[in-house]
Length: 286
Length: 286
Image 1 (cartoon, rainbow over the protein chains, first blue to last red):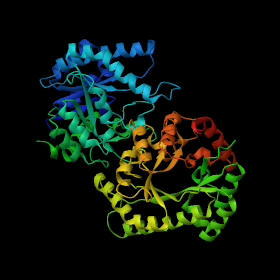
Image 2 (image 1 turned 60 degrees about the vertical axis):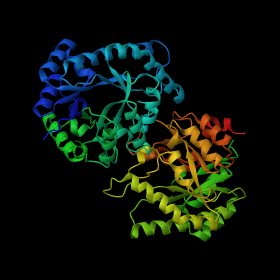
Image 3 (image 1 turned 90 degrees about the vertical axis):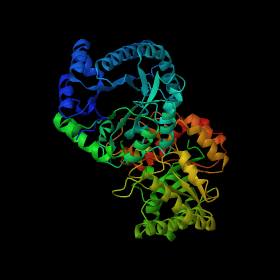
């Protein structure tokens, strides 16, 4: 079966356009989908809104905003403006989704600017950028969700590496405006992970829970090293229980970047995701 | 010039046998070398002792013990016995080295056992194994040095990923028996790194300071992703100052696993290491 809280993040079936992704997800018995901006924009906002509404699916999150680390200047201004647009798109998609949709915009912090070694400065600029977006998030009812990424991505993708660090930034702002993403792949290694999940939940900051697995050897492109739950070495039980104990009741996304999975048929990947989730994650769910 | 505190870790010139490594290191003006067990054992302990003594070099550390994560049974017993032998070898090499040599055995924790997902259990077994070694370390005057490895190695190489975690284990034992390794490559991403370096120094736990650089994209084999200081994105100044402020006065090793560097002539690599260290690290030194 396809668990009623399971959401298929669109990145898992990356090569499907929005209409196909919605159809495949719905046909596979899912009630929820996590959307990405690029396929939504490719479809056009009006058409995308209609497609999402007609699908009857919940929207569990929107990927992604962020990339906040440029120094002040035109590139940084473009990033801030683009994030405001992303907030609007997130609000529209959540509004078009079925009851229980979550207006959550996932934020990837961004890496070091070219030729920079100033990791501390880059991290400060993430908080400053979010400060510029909070009013717009509050006005549109969108929760920004800071996603800590695995430390192997720190220099080129996300200078926020731990859940504790994401919470340190998030807690500078109201919880309804800024939360965090708990993604097993990125934080399972952290000796402090269960404590930080509890902290996130206590503050109402868990905006999204995403699951996928870690296996070695890593592929040549480490961005594509995510696996179906159960195909790797992550024990999903403690983190899933911690997320539930922390009060999270929303959908749970499976988001996988993996060339082999992308190369399979989207319907096959959707079905395989549901089976993997049932075996590895669902036993912890109510 | 070759900085008087700079030590060439033998792994940087991996293909040189012990006699060659000592000669190349000495010829390049170094006063210190970090040894590995395999080339020492290949030479034989008596011959290795004589070679090290004749070289006039300090020995800054011995790599490596550890791999403590097997479940109880013959494999675990072999690991413990092998670590006791490594302690003896470390004491012998430090004794053969010039004044100022450090009897420090670097420990790599080990990854998850085959088919295991029990990261918490594996971490507990690291502490238990060290508990079995402490008396032998104290008796021989060797300081065991727990090395946190980058979280991308957590499943297959080292379940100890942060300096804080290494200190949590280390602090269960006397500082003269158990310390930690501060290796920029492994921990530079950690938002808590400077605080933990200070903590390590306050407790007399900095057994070794190792420097090399991080650059992306990572190579296909992520074990070989280390670079000459200055060739990547790490800012060595804050960590080096923190290590010095924490009271560390020992040698500083450059340890690089990198196929291109291994494929260069050992003398060239030794000279290039000294030049890189002078530019990226030495400006912080007294």
